[in-house]
Amino acid sequence: MKSNETTSLTNLKIDKINTFSESTLHPNILKNIKYKIPMPVQQHVIPLILAGRDLIVSAQTGSGKTAAFLLPLLDFVYREINNSFSKHLKFKLNPLVLILTPTRELAIQIYDETIKFSQNTRINTNIVYGGVEIRLQLKDLYRHSNYQCDILVATPGRLLDLCNRGQISFDAVKCLVLDEADRMLDMGFEPQIRELVETKNMPNNLHRQTLMFSATFPKSVKILAQTFLKNTCTTLNIGLIYTPSSNIKQYLEFVEEHEKKLFLLDILKKDSTDLIVIFVEMKYRVDELEEYLIGEGFNAVSIHGDKMQHEREAALRAFKTSEKNILIATAVAARGLDVQDVKVVINYDLPNNIEEYVHRIGRTGRAGMSGIAISFYNDKNRNIINGLLTLLRETHQDVPEFLIKKSNISQKDALLENRSFKYMEKQKSNNQELKEERKVDSTEIKSQNIKDNDLNLDWFDRE
Image (cartoon, rainbow, N blue to C red; front, top):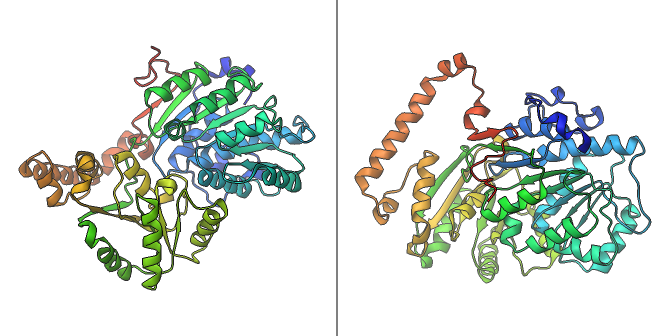
């Protein structure tokens, strides 16, 4: 966290942790962690953030990255406020940590996690996002915290609006987090992000710690990283980019449009009590499907972008508490929904790209649990057929015959490749002893690219 230590830290090798107790997290933070063994991304990221490193991190969806950055940041804030270094301004938010995220749902999720991990610490966390009248939001901020703010979670548009109204100061920011950076750029937030970071009195990258989390690294994200992060940043890629958890069993079914409702009913009747998320492309079809399922006696609720914020929050609350066990949603829930007990994800409509498919099915199989993803395919989805084939093979799933026939590869080649993958899986299970002899940690085997202070990254080219 301390920028003046950056130079000396660049020459240090920082080991990962195997248990939370191995870290230097304060005991008052540690006691709020309800599980003992950190997940792979947490093992690597927590000690690096505690050491003050700037980070660029890519990790599988559902990998535990939110806790990976929240825990060390809460540790930092807790020590700061207890050493009387934190200051608050009257009628103005003045956070030590700023977390930017693309959607309201993801912002709320991060806020809830922050509250959970900061119990009994006197840390003040606030949240601002669009979809709520500004006057009411400011009134809530004053009523709940009297503008005391150590950590601020925000979406870029609403945050910039509050800055322009003089309600927020960034001069105390010691750490900036950009979560789902690629999604924020896809949604057109780059101008707002740049204005917030570059023109609103925020300490520059030499005097703050910057953490960037992104599922992909297109050129726009590379440029943003070059601008916002120190040259001595550490890059981590835990697992394969765009690879869903191995705990998710994927099924593709060929279903014509007019058959989808009946096919869905057959699935739901077999699995009527588990938490299920159903993804639909169009907002009007979400409402239509919700009405249909309720009429069939199912406990369904829905969210999409045209619903009021209080309606979306109420729907998510009903789903998370299992009051309603079926959530129908557009892509608005693909990244912002974190419910560990989701058993089944159904792509009633497949998305237009394979990246969105991975994020959707990543709503299940979270935190080491198993899950099922069922997708309805028909000829409308030809544009992602090759991506689906590649992904199914990479994750060692069974490839349905109809997908092979409709692709531009021969059935013989596909079957041979499937057999090859199954043979490789068998060989992996037979080689556990060899793995032990080599003393290679399973996390490191999954890690495609863990580099330290490397300025010559293939995706971080300085053009």
